[in-house]
Image (cartoon, rainbow, N blue to C red; front, side, top):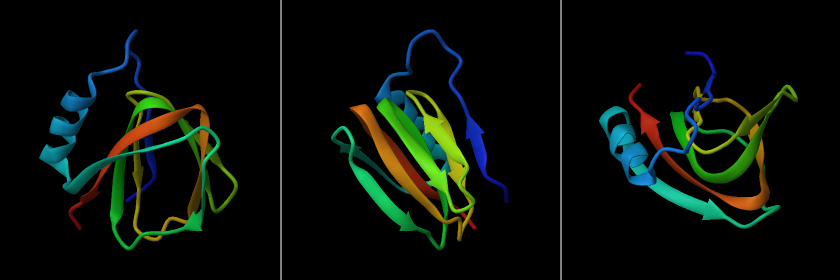
Length: 103
């Protein structure tokens, strides 16, 4: 499994409820969360494949190799198990919905 980043190419962001419903078809343990502007997550990893959509604002994920992935509303990110990453929330805060992909 590889890191996948798909940007949303529509003129407007998709409705968060529709994003969550679609994510539930692919993943388990789906939940939403949000953060204030400038919040940070220290570097960590998960033992599962993480599927995440940004639904509002922005958040940048920084991979262990220094690569930066900018997430905006409607963008999709898959992080394989064991992928080291940290994150920085953008100036407007962010909201995301995520779940665990089956092994």
